[in-house]
Length: 313
Image (cartoon, rainbow, N blue to C red):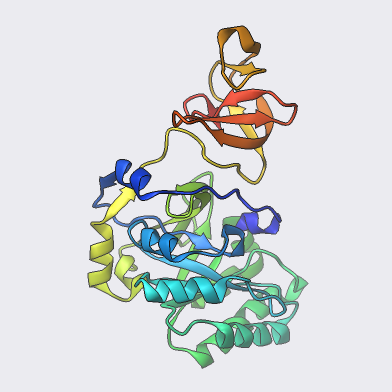
């Protein structure tokens, strides 16, 4: 969710049953993907929701961006989670400026939410309340607790959580902490470890999280141990060989020697430059060949492989 402050939408690609069937393996890991989804991932379709069910343990869906903005696809997407039996929570991206506005924001969030949600999240990663940030977080919690007995979860990234929420976050039933470089060192029940996980059901790279503590297993989040067990034993999609979409920075980094080409055929005669590990390239699109491989087009009209063995997003 940290990246949602950047108004960029990842590119969408189609995923067929044939592709899914060819790339699945059985997993009995502690959990499958746990993505958070907002309008930036688009309006989910029935087919995507059906595929999503077999690739996630649960979903965390954005309901609003502060009191004044409701996520465009929250109603559609949460209705599909209900339809296809996908456990989900909802989150409020906090924009409150005081304790009073935090209380109002919490009320609006609850009233707008799908009441099938298993839990509610305060996404607090932008401080608009100045020195009253801790009081505002407390007010949001107290208002939500007066409205529901469901689990309340605090989300932020590590440094922000300790600075602007302090010990108030310990009042919540669980803490969901983002730290992409390493495992968080503060109390963490759910760890958002990346913003570049490829989720085949949506054909996109997005945030992903891991359940961290034995006190809150997957069943605690889903509210149904049988559902959690079934999800744990279902199929999970392997990381693909090639990048299929652009990330928000529209930049790639070379990880080993690779060539730039002035032709999409990638023939030896069309090599224009040798690139070394560590070099960065700005790219504007990624394209699939009929053979199944993908390549990037750079902003200056040249071409480079999208093979993960040679480049990183």
